[in-house]
Length: 266
Length: 259
Image 1 (cartoon, helix red, strand yellow):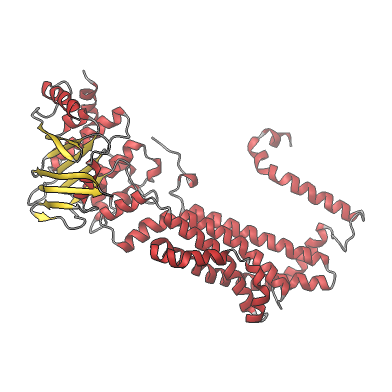
Image 2 (image 1 turned 90 degrees about the vertical axis):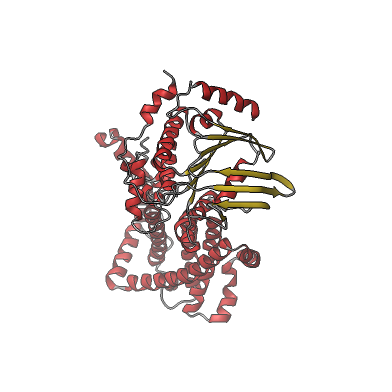
């Protein structure tokens, strides 16, 4: 122990885990001693057991897969529309005049407020959830695509025109890479909204998915399964975040902020 | 020994001589007749007449806002004059010409492309080989696969020079290209430019604030003021020039007075 404390790097990797581990231990002790009612907050070990059972029976994977599919289809539709609108408004001032202010107005409507309307339109089917996710992710992707394209260094565009790049090559080799850091920020926001929307939509009405699993467990007072669902959502959110970080590292390896392989050598 | 003559030898590129390529003329002639350019009612260039011979090295000096950069932008075809005629090799300039290349004050490299991809930005057949060769000419062949972000300011400007020269332009336009560099790097870049120009014989229009730079590099120096040419002086000093050449010193003094 004293060795790792002296070793600064080992401490740096362990330090962020100390507080969570202590908290979980205290929680476990409180639950075991009966201080916490198992109905309100079961012990971490009980949640782990519930998770293991759900995993072995295949129920967990089934629900996660359903939720994951909804999330991805919604992201593809909403993100695709947001990206396309952002590109058009970023590239053509006429399109900005026509499209930007209506989109900005719609953006201010909280998309979860549309749930009653969405249920009227689509019932409680898959389409309703996918629609809500799509609407939620569309705006951050639109805004950041638009902003990214608008803030590409005009000097680079002038240079590229002077060197004879066609409009298509100008777009693919200059404008898009320049806008990419901003678009990826938009994607990260969108992923957060995506899970949030899905949680709400699945808890209201569903026959499968993590939200359905937790709501069903609530009916039978299976608090451990409810907590398991919450933890799964957290893990999915974290996973999405890690994925975008990896994406940033791959796509933005030219960016000084992401260069780890090589220090500036002058 | 002056700083200049010391670094002349340092900065000279040791690249092997290029294979001679059959070309009609290495440089391009430019004729400007009565060129005017107004922005919002203000005349930046006012009925300017100028004839540049093929392969001539012309330096243009003047205070900020005298119309130097506007003149250069007209020559690129990025802007069109509000009045007058502009001919390159006898042809009226219409839009961007592939034989005209420009070097900006900032290198304007695409940060998301490797050095060699930046040099070959115009692509075309065998672009990679030609880009590597151009990099070799500016002494940076070992940095071909680096990101621009890890280069120094001088190295970035050399990459930009390689990018301008890779397509063998007939007219090279330089907009204060060395203004942002430190003194030693600047002299190195000036020597490199002089060597490449001596070898390739393209026509050069160099915009600068620096009378010493103008007198050391150019065949001919123009002083621009209020949108017109106020002084048009040939530089008769023999090359390679020394910074204490009496002709160079005399010209520097005259230029400072005229600016």
